[in-house]
Length: 510
Image (cartoon, rainbow, N blue to C red; front, side, top):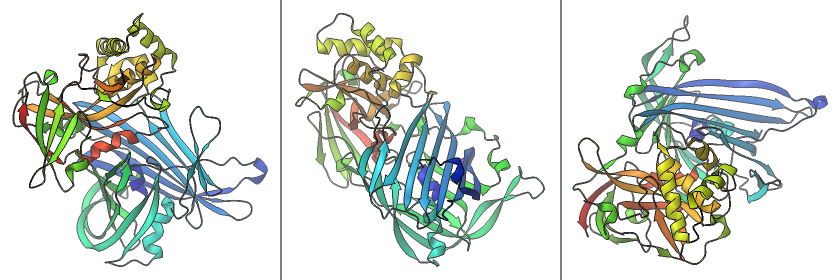
């Protein structure tokens, strides 16, 4: 299903052809969908399919998907934009892809071409493409959409197929099923005024496509399913996909004029940041300086053993009725052998080789030679010089170094890059952090990112949003990543395991 790829997107690598052999290109599909989050207009999806006929008669199909959404995060409205493209042959075999994630400023581009049984992935800054294993049974987006029609699917029909997910660099098996008609609302466009539409009721078949679990950085993860309501032609009139912990995005097939209307009341959009906060049953005084805090948590509809990191700092114990005990220690270093070069090298997002990042690192460190003191100086520098803002989109460390503004993500990424520029291995950590509501003083846990550095033969946590030189038991870690060879935001995906699905209570604090 085409729009599913925008949940975790796919794309195309354009072919260069000489003018003497110009192929014939015909647009065979051009569709627009208006997007709504919890009933509030928040953007649109645009998809096109081009049939490309080569001079020798060979056909290819190029599918392009453009997503533009406006989402609210901690009272600020932020734009989320992604473009994906994919080329497939007449049999549906994928030939190439391209995915563009629009960042706060600039773009993160991932593209590859299938050739000689391998996926050749272009890596920024590397002259030669990198060869990856390829499953030739994966089919393209256009073929996926045609499957129910080709199979003459009826109510009760079940089938599966393989979908390539470029943001994960994985082939994912998709389970599809067609259900009886349901009476649902859809948008009926005014024939005289394409910018006007009314909601009407109609009976449409329910078509579900659910991915099998995938393994992300060693842990199993269930991605959300896509549900569409289709007529006998299997063209979706409306669809819905879940944003974990946020709500459902409903898509209604409509005209370009209506889809592009900017009439949503963004002020009343559900707040992604505030709505994902986890309320605790009691306060923890001076939590970041405690020696140890014991929590209990329970996840809805999934096994909790893999929800949080288990290491020398976090201990897990299974209890009854689906509850787990999580004991989190204070500022404890995790002893480990010297990490791989990947934790020190400059990368697409952690651009430690960038001139501005190196300059900031040099200013922060000065003449200091002690590694632990270096990282604490860098943490304090980021804390003192960054302007807090929740309206900034995800960005590379080089961009953050120029703008010096953002939330916990930007603080963590910039600190990690500056530490590498100072010769200290680093990675980012994802998880939850203890906070108290500024008005009600209600104790809560919010989703958070911080930095971990390798000093004195151990990984030590640092949080540049706090600037205290420690990470205490108020930080509950879900995952970490070094961002090596990453051109997508896949390292952020592990929070899906917990987002909107967990209950947590405080048992003890020492």
